[in-house]
Image 1: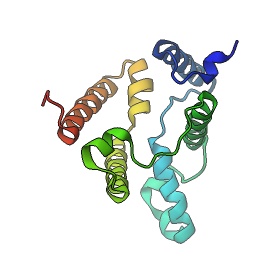
Image 2 (image 1 turned 90 degrees about the vertical axis):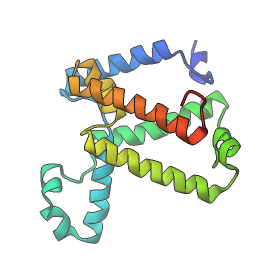
Image 3 (image 1 turned 90 degrees about the horizontal axis):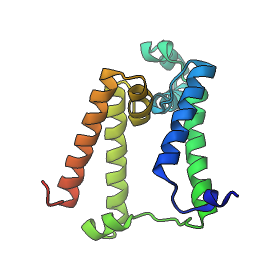
Length: 174
């Protein structure tokens, strides 16, 4: 009955429908959309609060968006736990510091991989804040609402991702 929970991959159609139902439910019950990029800036704010409370609470950003653990922050935690649980249940759990495609293209240097991952994470975070939303906020919730800004953001996400992958991994289409 629940063999699909232990499958190595799930049908993208069923998962997409499930995400759609999840978003409808979120809108219905909480009048909020799914998105997680603000959780990262809230985390930075919580760290700043521990270091310099006065300075942090005086910042206009954190007066508007308090640095607290909320539903969005818990969505990030749930995503991490859920993905780890899914990989464990499917039997495909493995710890890998260097993905095979990266190793094939750049070698097995862990420091290089960590530097590239850090730089990519910083750029993604900056882009998400600049676009006023992340791929889940714009790509799932915003497009579901037929938001023009979200559709433009998603097109830019895909275009930038394709170009970056082509430049980094040397795909022949570029």
